[in-house]
Length: 226
Picture 1 (cartoon, rainbow, N blue to C red):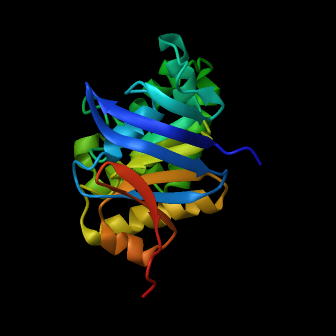
Picture 2 (picture 1 turned 90 degrees about the vertical axis):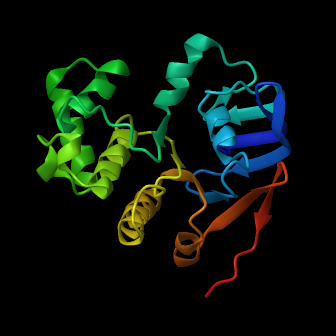
């Protein structure tokens, strides 16, 4: 099986500053991987490199069949169609309801058939248990529900990989567990998930392969199971 992600001798830059050096990583289809580390350690910079918000300048990187070193501006939307991204702060558009938030993403990624879009939106809302909120505005639903919608949005284009950048960062512990259970379920249905987090309680509760960013590098840590 081809890895969905391969990084070889990668250095990650923010401006002229190398925040991570000598990163080597391989992720296989269907894996669930945590990337842990303190705030400011470089987790988000690594994630941004994967979804092409930061350019990969040094080393080799292939992600969902795209060579990250040769990625052109016009390739980026196509790369992003093959991945789903879940952010800490939900990033829902506040001026439109749940349905229109999802519709906006489908239209932006090239969908045009009204009926197909409707079917797809209902399907992803069903997957995350949020069909009842289809006409609600983001401010009318809780943080946990907003994050479920954000997960639904990430599933719209049936991505090969979901990148979750601190997806429980703004949630209380109980809601964090619910969102985590949802992500685990999606993973068990075959999706690869790479999740940056510093929520150690969650990692202990849902142990899986864990990589740590520390002192500018990335290494695997062996978890102690409770």
